[in-house]
Image (cartoon, rainbow, N blue to C red):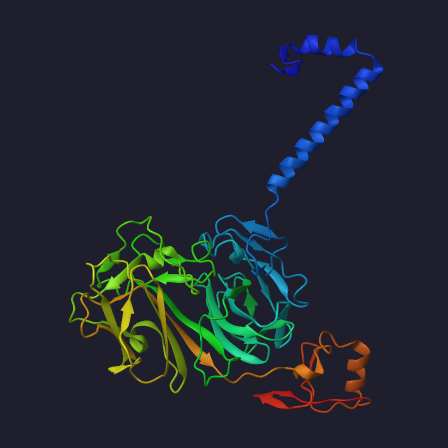
Length: 461
């Protein structure tokens, strides 16, 4: 039975209606007015509760390429925007529902893709604060969206700089590539470049601000160099899924639990509620609270990067970042001392001394060789076996160029008017060394830069 509440007492509906009819017109108007007002407030509160807070992750830029609407991914807590205002070309596709795209970390944005069948080079232009260090991630899905069951290969560029070659086929649901670099201009341009018959496509594009002190480079290295992701391994987590990212990692790095090295014993923080100090790298708690430990003091932890983890490019410089946290409370006065060596050559002058619950990250660069083996061993005087919580590997890209000279501004960008293209075609307009792609104009003032078949120089008319 439906009931209203009048004067704090529950009355049958018939009596309530009869009571309402005997009221004066003014009394009925007042009741209706306040009833409508109350209903409006209730509806507004309900709608407010449903609207997600899109600013709860400061600095995150997350694009679901090909999506028709924005949304909150409840699994990750990440707000996804559409790419409608960021790119002027391409075609949206829905990935078949039969594909296994239910992964909690990658499934939702992988249900759509934007593909670029026209033009050699198609670019996303993102606005972001200058002098900010970013992790930029592109995620790709094929999953046979076009029912052609083919392999796909194309390149991805950051501006005019080659970033990586992307290879996809119907057997893989998704793949991703990342770079870390310090952004200095007023926009970031991520471009998909056709290198053959394959049609480039992208599922999502993500920017994550980093602390400017992390992933430091050698003092002799160009600070504008790119660090291209190769591997990021959590060595010992016992209960983690295969992959881990935000909310576990505040920088939204993607961590993989490596089962190839599970012969190493795991060291686990005894009291899971114990707080570990937070440093600039801000590793996820699951990564910090477990570590791989060697069998004993005389056995090192060895990582053969060239055979176990990644394919190395000869004569290319790589950076490795080792993450340590002492999670075992040693007897008072005892210390765990660690040496890190590359191909039997120590990479530091003094042993690393670990302190209880204090994270330490050690970075090292090296030029790729046939065999690249890092060894984590107990240093002389250590009173505990060596440990390692996690590590990351990046390839250094040092040849960095800009499509425009910063002193000349970036005003000449976007679509070329049809009238201007016609003058170029009939030679009534003189252009000198201009590189035109996808009906867009990129100029380099006043210095020239040549990259393969791409030419950037001054022009006038």
